[in-house]
Each structure stands twice: as C-alpha cells, then as structure tokens.
Length: 153
Image 1 (cartoon, rainbow, N blue to C red):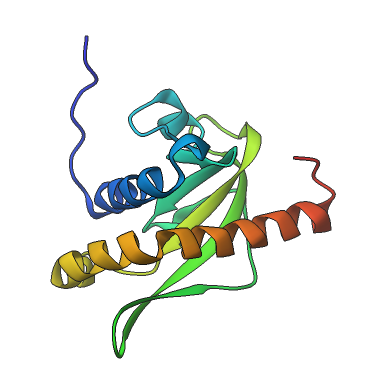
Image 2 (cartoon, helix red, strand yellow):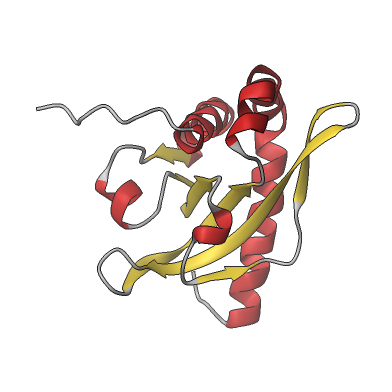
C-alpha cells in the first residue's frame, strides 16, 4: 500500500527542494524522512550527519522551540535575499506535549506564498547552490545550543 500523495504546499515544495539538493551533496550522510512517521510525528524532514532537521515556512508556529540567535541570508540574486532562521525543537503539541527522541534543527524560510510563487525558479537554484552552506551554518548554531544547554547529542 502506498502513502497518500500530499498536497504540494509551499512548505512541502521547500522541503523537497532542500532534500534534493542536500541528498546530492551529502549522499551517505543524508537520510530523507519525507512522508514518514518521523515527518508527521517528530517534525523531521531529514537527517543530516544524524541531526534531525525540519524545513518550514511556519517557523513562528512551531511549539517547544528555542530560537537560535543568528540567521542566514539566502541570496536569490543581487538585491534579493530571503532570511532563513534557525531553532531547536524538543517536542510538539500534536497530542498534548510529545517529547522528541532527539532535538530537531528547525530551518525556517521567512517567505510567504506570493513571494515563493514569484521567485520559485530562482529560489530553487539558490537552494541547489547554497543549501550546504546554509545547513552547515545552522548545524554550527545547533552544536552551540547543545554546548550551552548541556545537551549530550
């Protein structure tokens, strides 16, 4: 039995763009979890070097998240950038509070549907080009958070 096909929302399209770019770059160190229980119940779209990651356009709607102090500016073309914020989630509120097995690095694209539709092709190319830099930046913030909170990953 196959999983039901999900609606291609902006968030899902971004998840797939990032997953495609990162899987090509990192190969063995990348594990896609799209359309799995981990995606829906643990907020994990993929793992990169063992760190669970969640790509979203709903950054401010995430519960149980520590917001990390720095952002990444994803340049689409000269003069046009999208801010990418990072956070660490420890659980979700699907059924009350449910703790995650491991904290999840949240990668939040600060854009709305209209901006996505306008810049979709350029955004996809920028993600292909800069996804590894963006994720290395986010992972550095994640490890700093682990050190600061004493979390033993």
